[in-house]
Length: 185
Image (cartoon, rainbow, N blue to C red):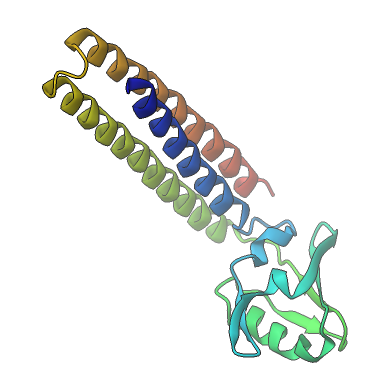
């Protein structure tokens, strides 16, 4: 019973950390990364579809992304979707391939991005702490129901606390890496 609670806590914390990593990977930091286009969606024959499912996206150079739709007729629509996104990118196409030059970030924009990353990291820490609180309440419920004794409950709560500390350290590490990446000119 206790094992289930601890395993569930670890699973939820891992997923929370993965969400943070995925969010960080989609943030633009002055280097071309195909994942920054993952959140862009467009209407494809009546269905809202992410453009990474409609085209091949690659980074042939450090500051250039290329988007090559499999269906050539949607090139203008993909271009419009990229323009409408909040990424501030200016695509240009030759009718077959869309090229996106990733502009150099200004110092002001870098500081803004650093603030956003800190905010996302703090939200992740709060989520991890909420998972800890939920699982500790489940353990206390098991204690009240006399399913486990007090000592087992204390040990389980200690294990969950150690796990929480480990995941929060990992969030801090991921944040540190992303901040260095953002501030790197």
